[in-house]
Length: 199
Image 1 (cartoon, one colour):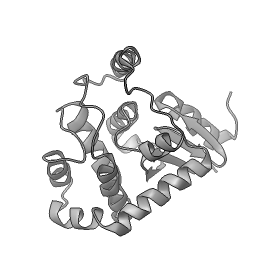
Image 2 (image 1 turned 120 degrees about the horizontal axis):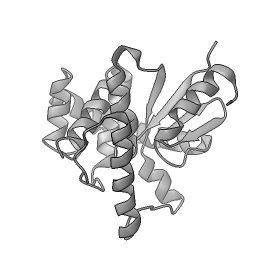
Image 3 (image 1 turned 90 degrees about the vertical axis):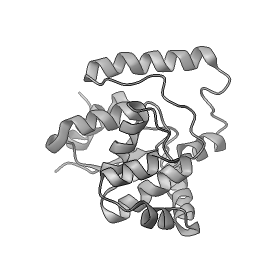
Image 4 (image 1 turned 90 degrees about the horizontal axis):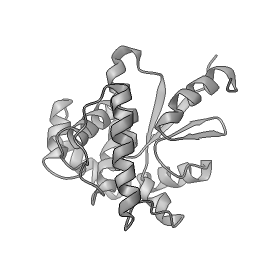
């Protein structure tokens, strides 16, 4: 029996677009992942790990790399997408509410579609209302929950939990005590969950 795979997903991570949007293409064949929203920026700041700020050469490489990998998956992305995001925590607090209520996956997929295909920044309007409307959720109701101190504290707690597991970036996949970081490690995580090893 396969071990569970926790998908630590943080809206705001650029490479996570590749994972989320290719999972969306799979439809009914989407792997059984437990989507765990967290705030990757909280971890990166705690670890003094700011990979692209004031690094134009590295940022240019990132966008080109995402473009090349998107071609592998048949994704037509609009690059560069708006980045970095000012309201990253709020976008993930909404995802956390969605995880409670069962619509996290649909929300994250739609949010990344709006971000990387339509150029709308997550965590701000009109992206919030459009993403929630597209999945049949009332923006006013969801925002009242997501913006609460309780959900903000829970996002921090989830982020701290991810860091304690050894997660330092997104996307990350955790199988037991094994951490797989990066879009290109999704398949490795799924194999490990099935076999307990690679190869």
